[in-house]
Image (cartoon, rainbow, N blue to C red):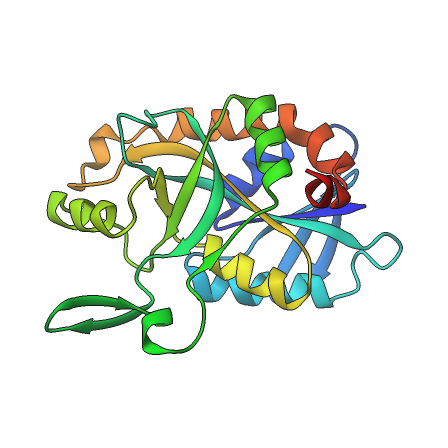
Amino acid sequence: MRVLVVTAVPVERDAVTRAFGGAEEHVALPGAKLHRRGAFDVLAGGAGPAAAAAATAFALASGASASAPYGLVVSAGIGGAFTPVTPLGSLVVADGIVAADLGAETADGFLPVTALGFGRDRFTPPPALVRAVAAATGAAAGPVLTVSTVTGSAERAGALLAAHPGALAEAMEGFGVAEAAARADVPVLEVRAVSNAVGPRDRDAWRIGDALAALTDAFGKAAPVLEGWNSHEDLEG
């Protein structure tokens, strides 16, 4: 089984590929390049859910894994967290991938797309896989929100938590990756390393280097779990 890992930007891609041993091969895709190490294909697909969905769909349809089909897609990178539950430098694995701002504003507040009578606003990764990755890496498991605009105020952070109690983190790509994976009938996972707190924007307080190092460490520990995972485990437990 091959695993496709989709990040937003090259620095995240490189943090993931550093976790894997062996020589690196490159596989050209339209507008992008897969970085292949062993059973893992890692792709920097671009920022935001639209770019992430397009890049994931191209990779899944490309035939790059024809000899060993993709059995799993992972959205990975750094992200903001609703601290203190998930402090800077910690890891989060999503037990729900949630489109937090897909819907409509009304006089009575925000309505998710599902309340409008169409679409979906949540994907649920395989529970047994979430548990296994959390155990291997020490990550916290909980909902990860996908937003198209990074939160920059305490008011917005509070509104997100009120709408999604228990949310651990926010990022910009997970739901797009999940949408493409679902259409290809491939299971999806999301792993985030925390670089900043969700709330007032303060770049001086961000710990991007620490988060990238944590991302490398996470994939080093999780690689055997991801490569060896079998979807029947979730059917059985």
